[in-house]
Length: 427
Image 1 (cartoon, rainbow, N blue to C red):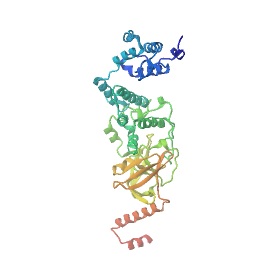
Image 2 (image 1 turned 90 degrees about the horizontal axis):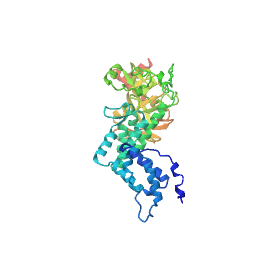
Image 3 (image 1 turned 30 degrees about the vertical axis):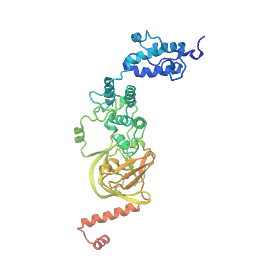
Image 4 (image 1 turned 60 degrees about the vertical axis):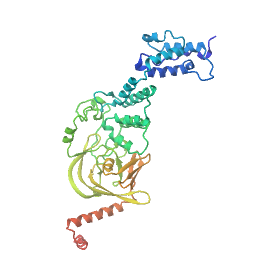
């Protein structure tokens, strides 16, 4: 009488056919799952102490499943097998190489996987982020199967290492977040970054006073790359975007490069003195000229994310009073660009880091630590953006600007006495 547990088990579709060493790893996993589903894996695995012997019917069922899941060209390896375990071991001994050559080959593959745009001649190029992540994780699993377990922190570093340069702001944000990076965290961030950028966004989110907008076509055939001027792809997918850095730098001299985190911003209006932390901005930017101290006129422009050039009309210093809990802290920023068409003021994370400050991002807050290890600013997450916590009202900022203006005119008037300067003010 047939075993009722095995009835109908042949109806389970086989997911993979073994063809050789190139797909043994995935085949062994898929076939193991089929055998577990059929309740015949016990005929293959090493029996535990005191476990009853496997029936011949169960072993023959497992043997049939294994033989039907391999290519006919390798039937010779299992033709003389008397039971399922013998057939499984024959295939394992033939194709599961665990020697140094196999390890070196997999390591070479693991360190050579890159996303398109960051490739070298000898690399394995992945056209999508999903393929890129899958290749790295699959190869690391293959290494673990041959006795070389890839450390999770190292795999996280490899995930970041193989990304092209347009992912640098994302990597900077991850490294400055203060959290323990794992491969799963980096993987989720890479895939999330693609999801966010592929959603329909309002490109002019930071252009509060812009008089014109640019419609983005959803049809790639109508898209022109602004780097190589060819049709059919975006600039982020252009293979030439980093091919000639010197020429690009010369061409854009006098322009500050600015890639604002506009993806997360859903509004184009904000308080004139509100500041937002931006890991993608290369300069501090403000939209209110009254915030500038010792302002000087300039004639330049910045490029926003849709390659629209917006004018920079002045630059100077800005003093901001930050709320750090029980007290306030005055922050002084130099070389701040005045861009009237922006909807918000932006604090450049990279600029602060260049000055020796440390910026750490958490789930709800970010903190700025001075070189002397003092907390000088706090950002509060709201609507996907980290907004600087300022002291209530703008009186402190106005007084600070008045004091700075007084010092400025004191220097310009050859250090004239305070009394004489006050009399000049009333004339």
